[in-house]
Amino acid sequence: MTRKSRLAAATAIIVFALAAVLVRPLVGGGVYEGVAVEGVAVGGLGRDELGQLLAAWRQEYHSRHVVVYYGDTAFRLDAASIDYDLDVEATAEEAWAYGRRGSWGERLKNIGAARREGYRIPLRVRYNENKLAALLEAWREAIDRPPRNAALSLEKGGIVPQEQGRRLDVAAVKPLVLKALHAGDANLPLPVTPLYPDVTVADLRQTGIKELWSSFTTAFDPADANRTANIRLSARRINGHIVYPGETFSFNQVVGPRDREHGFKEALEIVDGEFVPGIGGGVCQVSSTLYNAVLLANLTVVERSNHSKPLGYVGLGRDATVVFGALDFKFANNTGSPVVIMAETAKNRLTVGIVGREPLAVAVELLSADRQVIPPAVVKKQDPGLFLGETKVDKQGKPGYEVTTLRVVSAGGRELKREVLTKDRYQPENTIVKVGTKLPPFVQEKIDQVQGKN
Image 1 (tube, rainbow, N blue to C red):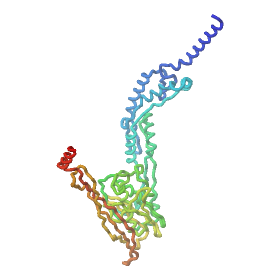
Image 2: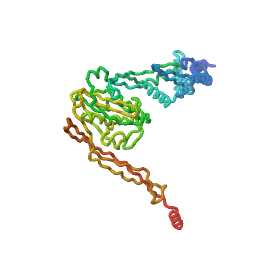
Image 3: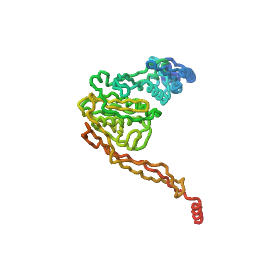
Image 4: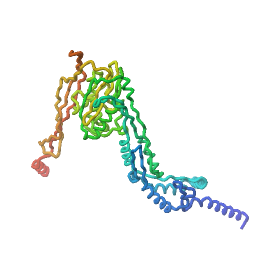
């Protein structure tokens, strides 16, 4: 062998040895050294061994639970109740794939980094978002309580002191619960934000308010639990609210958004002339009852809209619909002293009153005039299930109305003012009549015979 041949052979051996050193880490039969899952070293484990380890952990995760609490109120959340589970496949795949993806250079770099510094992989978990959301909503309903302003009681008389409210921070609870389940902590205090009333006993006494100017009462069905809850919640929020001279009261601003986060529930409400389920159904009964109390107190109405159809709890022309962000009810205190709104529910009755410093110097009467009935239209719809010439009333319509509402103000038996408040229109509901289009059997037979001849 020549010197040149020996040199070439030696070079080839060195290159082969160097390549073997470099490639050996890339063909390992297990998880690479330094890789840890949740702090436990799994380097050297084969794929099956890794799966068995994670499967054992999975059983322990299934038995976990967390007790969340606020004061004396506590709730237990079991992992199974939200389908909380360890994702064995995803966790194993991440551990096994480390150092096995990318170019050879990238793989060698990652393998070396794991040996020197370690590489930590968290356990991958999964759970049912809807089930957890339902539990959080149940906790919120049990804990949330709006603040109550100090107010004069229409039912019992005297001042009812203010009460601090509270609100569960639902957005903060979710990650805390998941972290507690992951860590195995058994007890978790809930994050609750205190809510403070706007009006205190001291505020109320300072105004000198004590004389009832007006009150108005409407009835509701306590069996409709969600609607009743919405009525009570919105009544509580306007109760005790002080409106100072020259100030304008906004129902939407005081009551706030009608959504689950603010404590409102789903109940029927009118949308585009139809009763449909919506969050906050029943709130319009509070705004309408307040509207009547405001009118009877001879205060100035700034903004008000009527519903699209008549309501059972208040007369025509005497309602005030509200939609947060769209339709508001506003009135101004056009007197020289502050007034306070009182709103209370008892059994099936909602009463709203306006109270001032001195007795109301005038008498107020509300009248309806120029009432007109708008007959419902008849809408015909074809129905292939009925024979030709047959008709059937599918929905009986209801009349609509037009009405003018007046306010008459008098003092000492003498009329001081007669004003037109509103001219309202309530849309009728159409009568739906089905009209048959199916041919009688003997006519169809004749047609078939004729067609058959052709």
